[in-house]
Image 1 (cartoon, rainbow, N blue to C red):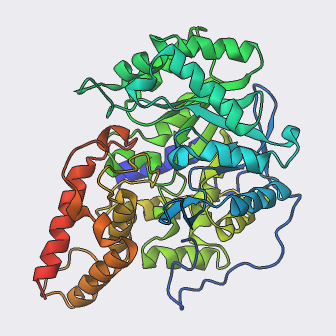
Image 2: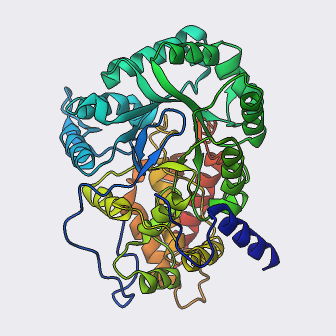
Length: 476
């Protein structure tokens, strides 16, 4: 507990709170019927969104940012009469309109999101609103070596402008710096090598700086997963005046604050990252506040503690309030696929009520308990998709993590819970993942590994899950 106490104290010191509230500007029903949860109702205010000011441009940014990576989909018949999954543009338009009405003014997308369709869908939805009333964030998502040339990078930027129906980008990011799962000519690259190949040696970073001078980029920054050496290097360039970072996007939640490496050894504690940004006055954009949805459903005894403290607040709301509590947070991104996700998050941020010291202590202990479960650190970003063999990798991992969280995993045959857990895993697996898209069809080609920002050994995990499924099938 000594190290845990130190981490808790450093967290509270970072927030600058004692016993008082900080004075700064698949979703709910995660417990049983007797958990004490009574959903909040009534109209959501349209004029109470908490705003944070960007010290570089003085933008007034909504604390809730719309992550456009998980737009809703629908199934239609294509020209061949086959079922095809496409983005549901009508529903996207409704979500954006409702978000705009309630003060959400930051929309984060990428050429890589939704299998390359997010920017266009986001642009269509936003074009129905006054351009001066929202901020667009998108990225130089040049993950493939085929896009590492200067010409390909420029083309990607120009296409972003076209799809988003705008002539400037408010927040432009070098996407996913530090990732060390990328390869070139079959050889793995570390984070620094990938940084040079993707952004420095081809002149793309300098080109972005020129676009900023021309007003085509208003804020320039980067998002981070992986090798912390790359973070330190880019911040050193900022300190030396070679480049100026207007913002940085990091992964932060109440588990990753001081336990990031326990979730995934390739990650870096958010405490360190936010601390380095604070030293330099660089605002932080927060991604993965729910850790890929994992913090929207927590173990039952943790949920009961949350409901006891705030009976009418969802489990997910705790993670969002936590991320917004930091004064350095400019906006917190949420990939809100459904209206109920959007409505719940709006209740958390219209306005934000920051966490108290008591709540911080509870969340810290919750993180310790949650980490006792053997999760796979998938955040459902879908960068690994499509699989050339049709495997639904995110759905498989989501089902596995759900069963771990629900205590439906890894019981012995002598355990009284075994039969219930076995049925829940197998039946739920067939319902959530079609048989032809299950882990048994993975051939281990490894194409997915280089795309994973969490550096998950995806073929190994799929093979492990398939072995577990087969063991359940042979044991009655």
